[in-house]
Length: 79
Length: 518
Image (tube, rainbow over all chains, first blue to last red; front, side):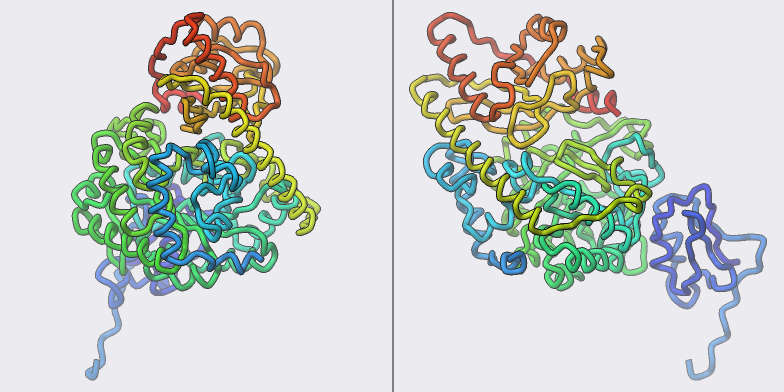
């Protein structure tokens, strides 16, 4: 399940945009939005989702339960 | 000319200056060096600072108390992201009528920011300094911050660049800071003890991870002190801001002062916590109070002599424009800037600065001439005087129009700026407000006199009743000179037995007046 941003909570500070490893976050009308197709929940990049870890307001970057969980691509044998 | 001044001061210059500062403290001179006797005045406010350092601070309102009467600064809010959480900050609160640090209504792109700088520089010739101070941390937004610096450096090379940071990322950007000729950096260091840090910082975000508790505070403290030392080694002047939080770091600030001094900090600005439940901060919610002006002054006094203490800070907004204490933010909204005709002319600005420097020199000479008269009177008495001023070191504001009063401590050594008190403006649309008059009196009731350009009969009577003498005979004259002349006459009257000297009671809580003014 990708993350989504609760726009009423978003201060528009852009911290998440700077940290997202997938460039999945962009600004729309003063607050930020996560492109669910690009969000990987930071799996394979970092131990914790960067948008959640850097966001100054609690409960702003949350799991979007309406979408299926992100599946990390299977690692090749050489990886 | 600007570029050559950048690297003029080496580490040894700074350390020498700090050594000299100790001497300045003993002689009871202020940052400006204009209050004491002898050589301070002959150097027109330079005091004991070496020339390289004086060039860097003489037109910087934050780094020179004396310059703050004459020169203005502006902040551009291009860097909204932050990488730490402080208990005195709430990122959600953003109101145009609010005026506290970190809060801002308009966030700019670097391109919009440079347009704003040119618009302000064209309209406000005394603007000499551009700072990036959030909201957020400029070094959590390095691209936007340095892009803005780059654009401003090209378009307006005579403007000094500053940045204000929490220090977490500072060691990583020392080269960029040097390369962009940023010669003034402010680091907020509230503690050098991670245990105390845990009560101020709930978390930090560092190297892709959120840290909490002791570990977070330890990383932050170490990075701040490392960054400070690196800046000193590069000859970058560094001011350290510390928020005074009663019960948490108030007794620890002398230690902070010692540590930052040993790392080459140039100026220490101990400022009061602004906290109120409606700000929605963790401290606001927990009922953590800010210090009274007296508590703040006591801590500042206890650090005096160790390094230069800043006492004229107005804790301005991240989009402040104008002289310290003055807010012209509303004149320069993006909408207005876009329709403004830009007339950025270096020659006009240069000519203006030359005129200001002439006035400054005259002001210092007048202050010294006045001191001569004071030398004949013997007394240990110290009194405070409040001054209504619009800037330029003059008593040029009406009592009823003053949104703040500057406070000077008068003694045998002269007139020393010790702080300011924000108040509700008494005269709104020509009518006096009784409620605001009471709050003004309570804000300055530790002062013996209030110097004004003009004052109405009603407030005059109320002030006299409260034991504060309204003084309007020095209207449009220099503050320091007038205060010394008035104080000399006061001491003479006390010595001759004409009047009895009475110690004034303490002023009300500063926070109370700030909140009522918000």
